[in-house]
Amino acid sequence: MYYTPLISALLQMFLSRYGFLRPVNWEEMLLDDGEETDKPHDPHFVSALRDFQKLSGLPVTGVLDEATKDAMNKPRCGVPDKPSPKLFDIARRKRHLAALVSKSHARKRREVGGHVAFSKGLLRWRLIGEGYSSQLSVEEQRYVFRLAFRMWSEICPLEFTEDNASPLEEIDIRLGFGTGRHLGCKQRFDGSGREFAHAWFLGDIHFDDDEHFTGSSAGSGISLLKVAVHEIGHVLGLPHIYRPGSIMQPSYRPHESGFEVDWMDRKAIQSLYGGCKGRFDTVFDWVRRERSPRGDVLIRFNTYFMRQGWYWLYENRNNRTRFGDPVSLQSGEQQEKRDPDGRSYPRPISEGFPGSPDGNIYFFKGRQVYAFSVDSNRLARGFPRPLRSVFPALDPQDHPESGLDAAYFSYTHNALFLLKDTRFWRVTGARERRTEPRLQKNTLLPHREIDQQWFDICNVHPTALRLHP
Image (cartoon, rainbow, N blue to C red; front, top):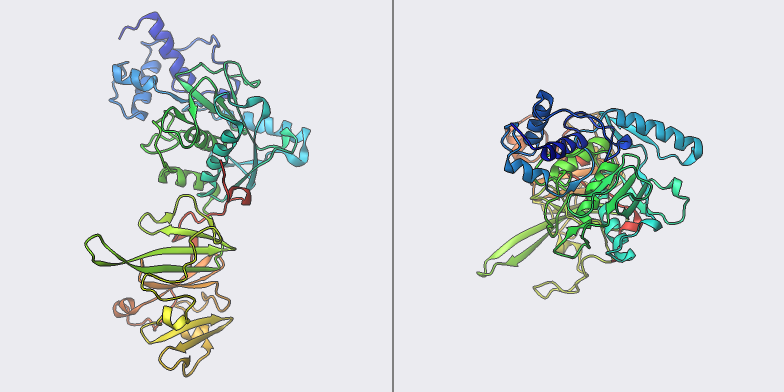
């Protein structure tokens, strides 16, 4: 295939810059360096072009066709798709240098599966004063970045806080806008149209101020929020992910209102930092009756997890928490004095909770279980009883013993769960006893970790719990 000298040069520059011809030591590479590259007819060049086409979901031809040109011309992130492993050696050398300058405040990192990751759970960030955007107010920029960091905090055990007081060298993630040669960076921006931002594994994120960035509520232009979430992903250690819907795709997708971090991105970040663990004060399903437009009575429920004055609404259909949680109990659902049927609150527990099929309401305290009879309005005969006798364990060595955090009946699973610390025990029901006669009533199955059953119930830093533009 013959290409004009100009097309050949541009094609070589693209494939070289983004690591398809050879892995890129991006932090040491200049955009306009004059290094000799492979020629379009060389096998390495054709292989690189085919590699790009494959990753982009295009027909793999090894020829620069129109679809390939369109893919290469899309606005995109400036981070290479195939960075060199030596990039991490550079990161380690620079980190050692930072440690010599400020031993107690070095931004510590670790390696997980060949990827660089922070080794601490609380990260500080700052929009640097010399790097403000000329298109948005400073407050709008800071609001977007607070929201972007929070979106990552909601799905992994990292917390982020804005720090405008500490010395700059103590800040973990620095953000700024610039044009052309900018902010002392070796990479220069190319003006409006192609690269809109790039991030460094050492914690710096730069945005091209020649691009038309828009705030979180705008429906046009380039969404600063989407770009910021993408670049923060790089800083945290994620590479580009070629998957439809991933926020870590190298090419920018048009603005989508209400976008969320994709399932693949969640799994990728949790492979570096793990899932979110923690104990809960209470868990329950809020069951209510609603009428359909046709007048039919429908039974609906939502699951709520509560911890230290905050709550998460769990979307059982999607098996994750609602976007934007946790929410303060004081600022969440409004307290109602009457329900739709006109009954006033507060009301006796026995009216709102009619009890289990045996007519009892069970209370847990220490090592004891108390059964309250709804019919007789008193403690049931034979109670209190030891927790272990009411709920025997399948494995006698695997029992919560005492001090439960919550007892939760799940309408989704039609099962009772006992929660303590970061673990839960599922209580066997009648169906399981029919298939396995050796099981006693209320047998506890071996424990599992809460984050293996209910995903992404994550804390965020107190400064990110209340966001205001």
